[in-house]
Image (tube, rainbow, N blue to C red):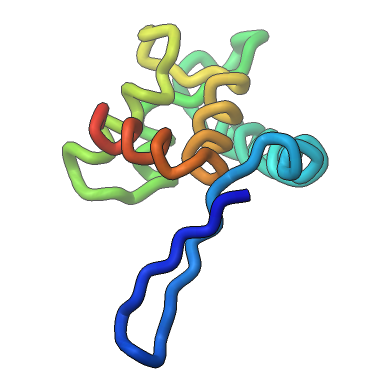
Length: 116
C-alpha cells in the first residue's frame, strides 16, 4: 500500500493512502457493494421514469436530486455513470462507478476528474 505524504507546515502532515486491490477487496465486497446496492434501490424507488419496468434504473432527475452538485458537474458525472448511454443508470453501473470514485487509486481518480 502506497502512502503519500504532503507537508503543509513543519508540524502538520497529511497522509493519503492509495487504494490497494488485494487488501481492500474484502472491504469492497462486504461493505461498499451492499451499501451502494441499498442506496441504488432507494433511489430507484424515487425514480418516476418507467415505474413498472422490471429492471430498476435511476433517471437523471433522481441522480441530480441525490448528488446536488453544481450544474455541469452533475451532468458530466451522470454521463460517466450512464454506461449504456440510455439516459438511465443501471444498478451495476451505479455500484461500479461509486466504487471507482471512493476506493480507486489516485491515478484513476485523476483520470475520472479529467474525463468529467
